[in-house]
Length: 556
Image (cartoon, rainbow, N blue to C red; front, top):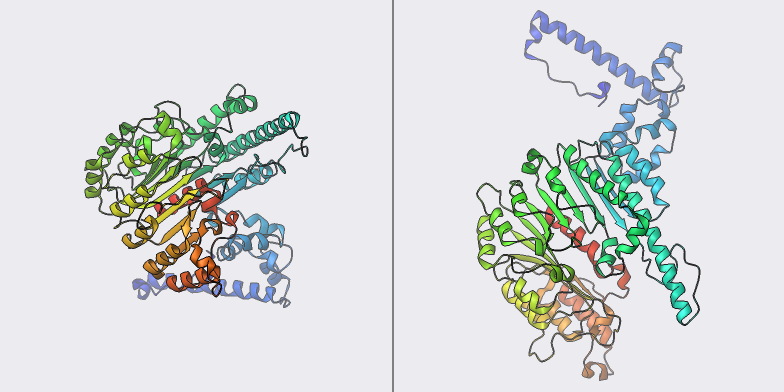
């Protein structure tokens, strides 16, 4: 960056001519000046006195005295470029001049923020977005709502309530107060982000995630709360208009991802994108199943503009047979990653009749031999899953998360038979309160479906289970079948059960034996998951799916 740090170039071909000799002489004088300047700076940093007031004046380029504070801004920025973000922040605390150089645009091409929906975050977010929002090229923001449905610790929590009907009324009032504050803060934070980047024409990747809508899907958040926070709907309308303005002002946008946000994307949002930007878009993710009725966030006609799309993430009910046909057209580049969210709310309000059939999936696979599919299923009935899981889907990852319904052994067996050549990730989650009655997939079966999954799916590298009974001897068999190829095996402690014969053997500790045998089978130390709160795949399935979808789409 600095002129005096430039590398000497080879002598130009015209150096032997008179004009060339003049250029060489000028280059030598310039180089000599650079070396003298650098020598003076280094002498000043070592604390050596200068040879006179004129030399000291040359040394003090940026401050009143020689030293670190007197370094040119370009050199400080160059130093910062070798540091991590945390080290830059610490280094910027040395003096005001270094702090001014901290937010130089070249130092922050990417900005990834994870925010608690808390009033304390707002001034920090405003400062950061005011500094970086106008030039950042890649922006990822995650809004993480705290568990305001818990019994205490939330805002407005006035302490424990008395037992009985009166206590329930007080608790309901406290819950309502906490939710109103969450929504109010959430809207302000979203507005802060969108306002700061509305005129950013350098934006290439834009990603938003908010888990407040998770509770909305479960019925804990109704329109009543939203109407109290935003009676006239002005803030929601302003958020939607700002989002469309960002899309219309974009000139380099390649990646657009919005998942589980609260009423930010509308069915008309994508029409704000110019044809030039739509034609060059490489990734599009619109995951929001709160759209009422049969309306969708993107139509097949709108998808025709995205001819360069390599990665797509949608609600499964929005991915129709007509969309599959559009993606197989010759003017579209081959789609390589497809992530689909199957939610019981969408299935109840939208029909599965328009979903692609097996022939459509075959055509997609012929169009792109590298196409891989990632499916996340929330509380889907077995009969619906049987309709969804077409044999020709190149399914690489599948994540089941249940609160009411449970995955049957027949579904697991079907997956292991149909997708044995592709499947690498299998997550089975059942978030039940009563831990004494976990469903057993091996009931009335000669072989455990999970063992058959490990046997058939030779590419399986991740297996995570919670809320389903996993027998100890079957877990050992899974570890031995897949060996070191199974990189991740996460099974919660309460999901593991032992045969009576294993428990009756006084000479062998069954838990110690399980840990030893599984570790030997995997070729690495292993233990059951003792604290479920430590793994987001179990505690925050939406966030886990969204982050995995991002990495899944980037890994092309």
